[in-house]
Image (tube, rainbow over all chains, first blue to last red; front, side, top):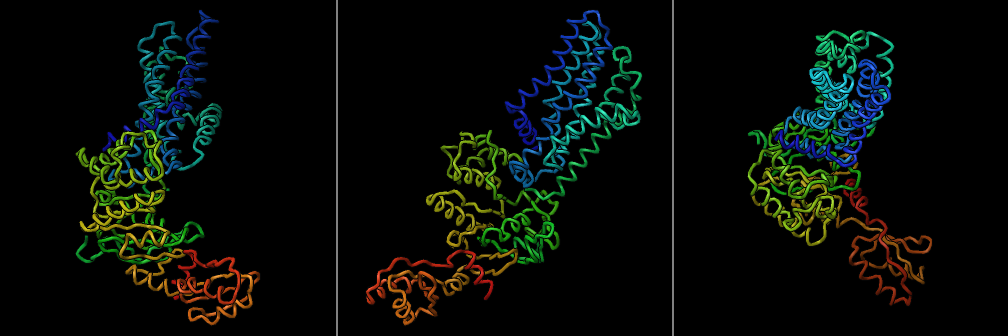
Length: 241
Length: 307
């Protein structure tokens, strides 16, 4: 039953248009990293980690990748009026929400992890194997948290993409950078905290502003759980169109 | 089914409103096994009523019970309930067979022969391996019906199931419904087409403006509908003579000259339609048009509601 839900959600995620967009979003930071390394072969790791890993990938392309998949997970079902096909089956609502989040993570997770690992390797001139693994793990933390957040958004608003863009640019991009305390309420803050905490050497660029590792991990888990529960509550209480 | 109730589906003082719009207003009824039609004009609240029964919509007040159990929050009830919603929504990237198989898996039905049986019942064996995105409207309806039947539910809630189907498919559907009914299942079918419900259902719930206007045996209600007076406009070359002649007919209740025609109220539409050409011939008038003015389903319903 759960496998059928997951398989359906995966097939919905694998549309040609979405895959093309995901490929562009994945290639963009890699292209920038390669370009930066070409014009400045002797540049340090910190510049690339701050400029490409954090500012471009973690703040823009990764959330956009997850947003593209997660907001449509329920948003498309509501728009196409297919949600009733799922909610009139003897399936726990929690399983439906979980399947949607899991499908987003299954598609975006490996992609984001690979991009994060490659950028880390390029930043350290081919070294930092452990850093690459930690970079991939950090990207996965961000993907899971964003997947939960944007899946909920797709259920509560028909303008989830607009909501996502405003959230990413205004909250994660602007406000969290200005107000230090908001890092404890930011997916980017959790990810940077996790990276700096798990491998301080490879990700020393993030150390000055990073939150503590336990706070980062607990924060990411709590945000994931919170938005999962909010999505579940919404699915249980809503009038299905 | 609970011991306290013989009804498979039961609504108790159910209302549903969206903001200031009342979609269903204080409706109570009980439905026994067999075929029951939910009949009403477009916008009457039929779909909302069905959605309340299948838990897609939560009641603003009152309660709905299916097979003796509360519907709200009761996902396990769907093992015994088959729901075919109004919109012909499908996953267009799936083949018909994949769609029915997915419905089976979500019902925990692992037996592939159940998928075969459901597709056969919907008469879509030949098209089962085509993507549903290429299906006609009638085929989409039939594959949805197959997915609704795949777990052999005890209660079926079908919202406008004949939309888009051709006459042959309607006949096949009627046969299928009759067979399911004979097996003791409870089938609720909504429609805004009187004749469609007449061919399928023994009992009806007549819904008008969110209220239950009438319920019970279809034929008793149909007889009442046939007794209602009809308004007909007759356009002829000699209007005044035509009006004088028509008023003499037994089936005519009143006659009024209105613009380019004679508006007539008749107690027997069939007899009136037979008599008008004869009258025209007798008085030597050319007959241009005989036009029923209130033959819409809405007017039929308003008549029943006002009785």
